[in-house]
Length: 109
Image (cartoon, rainbow, N blue to C red):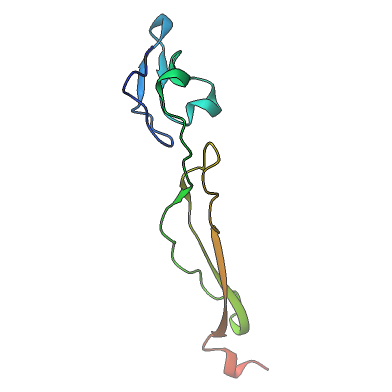
């Protein structure tokens, strides 16, 4: 299979060609991990540094404490991992303080 003018960043299942035996071979950066790159992948695809890319932050979780001091957390996912010495991924998790104020807090003994 040939990657000629067909190289993709990240993991892209649509970035493939027919290889030997009519099996799919891939021309995306992820094929290096899975070992299913097309024969000319290394020669055809530019190996410039690719920095990490991440998706948006998810929503904050609820407070870990119903009454009093607790914490909330949120996370995000890597969309393109760093390759060839590209910038590393930023933090994927954040935590912040919160104060639980459940209606039953004032009546607890």
